[in-house]
Image 1 (cartoon, rainbow, N blue to C red):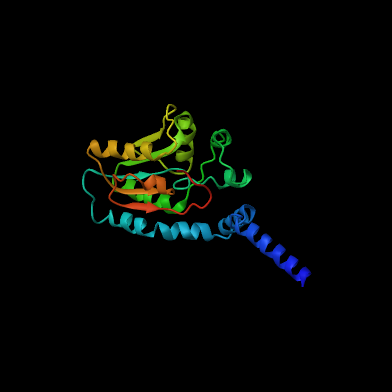
Image 2 (cartoon, rainbow, N blue to C red):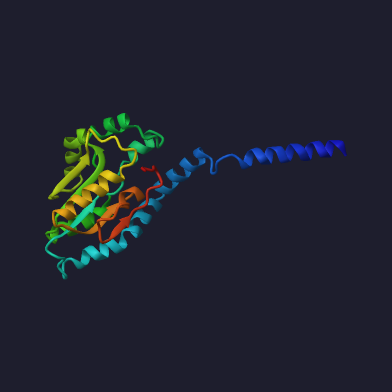
Length: 216
């Protein structure tokens, strides 16, 4: 009986330890994300998430938006995929490593959002790109965008070298505010992070899936 009590106490102790362990295990979660991406499920989810935005874009051919209408896009995991970087760095986000990756100038387009970009351009809408990429990467970013089929945008806003905020929200929402103050009506804001959508200054938002990293 004493042995049974000891075994029960040990089991309860181990269960208590397990209960305090974050779930799911980080390695297993990374494996799950890799399988989800490589199976094609990521692109399927990305395509489904953008379906309403693509329907809206298709309507621009027959129903012209207001003269002051504009569209805003994020870049990373919105217009361009960084999957080779994420996979090779085991999903670690390092500004120095990402800078090296960007300077390789490997622009990889995400087809669903490129379709919307091209529809906006065909409709004559001003397109503004607002990204958390450092302004020091401007030349490489422009090269990536052009090589991936993104040309004809009206403005590229990059995180200033002097920016020290813990969150990207003030920069991105502040930039959208500046555009509205200049008279633009942002009819669509396409992003992959919740922080990209915070702060308003857009009629419609489209949140794209990105379980690979989080930006506050």
